[in-house]
Length: 466
Ligand SMILES: Cc1cc2nc3c(=O)[nH]c(=O)nc-3n(C[C@H](O)[C@H](O)[C@H](O)COP(=O)(O)OP(=O)(O)OC[C@H]3O[C@@H](n4cnc5c(N)ncnc54)[C@H](O)[C@@H]3O)c2cc1C
Image (cartoon, rainbow, N blue to C red; front, side, top):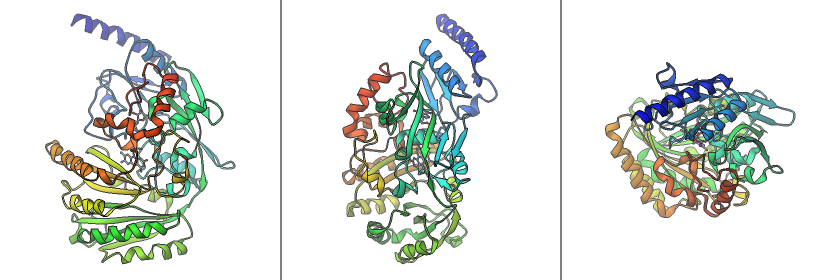
């Protein structure tokens, strides 16, 4: 007991020494901002690091890594804290908090963005849209660009421009030894291959360089909402419709209880629905014609589709995805939507165990399918859809019911799933799924891990064992 106390006191003394060398801050338990800074998006995760190093720049990240390494401290790395598994925070160790590193520089002339890892998708979209540019990122603006990119990254633009990693040109990485490296196709190319999907296993990225594309500023986007009793016919027609649409058009599926949307009749609020979020990044008139069949899938409860700023659409789901709820996810990749899968979506959609639980399906089909499986660490290149079973609720008393629903639905649909899994959607209890998530790329990932992090210093992630 006394030894423990002595060690803690010695470590605290060393942390105070570290503090003097940083441009950023060190926050210790008991300090006013400690509890706020250790909160992450998923309220199921409640951990208490022994120190939070709030880095101001890459030098701070280097110092924090060297300090933790030398003193045998476990570390976690936090971008915007959205990771469902809660890997960005640890008990007792050091949380390297990057959320204050938000500098973004855009070079409009050569369509490049240089992005620090504390930036959220909203920060990124705002900076690049100021020049009429964008690159595919996710659909919730408070998500971190760092975690999202390192796991793969997909969103409304993915059909046209691929995954976020397909637009990554280079990255500055600090390794477990504290070395600063730049990784791209010609320098540290093995590392560059690995960080495109391999998560935070290889080092801390302090700067991303992305390729950008002209997008918007207006896009055609919105929702069509059908009552849940029409779910089966909507799903069947969706399956046919998406086979022939151009990559500028993206349509997803959400099965949930209706939020109080102003374009829905009041009696429908809170009732089960199947909604089609629609996004078209092209000429509005052409888009209107293309999406016209969507409103004939059944008798819609309401729709609201029209020209909106791209940035606004990128925030459209924020209100449903606020931090602080309890969340448990399960996901499958899919190459096709077989009848049995549609049956199960209807069956489990009918049993949504809380007002916030949802079944959500994103359409990926497009240029990301043309990338070779071994071109990046992210391997499930054949995935045309990704289905996320999103358990979400507020009351801990509902944990068992909501987790149980997600797990049973996941099992019931496993036989329809295709290869691999999206590591960014994997929960804390899915560490056994990492190897199969990477499939044929896992062996090479282990080799790169052995080269850059043989001691597995970076292990709070979907871990690749060296
Ligand atoms: C509401 C919501 C919506 C989402 N929507 C989408 C979506 O549309 N598309 C999509 O692709 N994904 C989506 N995701 C998943 C998202 O990509 C992951 O949750 C991702 O991990 C979030 O990144 P973050 O930086 O916020 O996470 P954090 O929790 O901060 O970090 C996650 C992990 O990434 C690693 N990491 C973070 N920063 C660095 C760094 N700079 N260097 C090295 N390692 C690092 C660490 O291992 C860390 O544990 C969504 C998640 C949420 C919660």
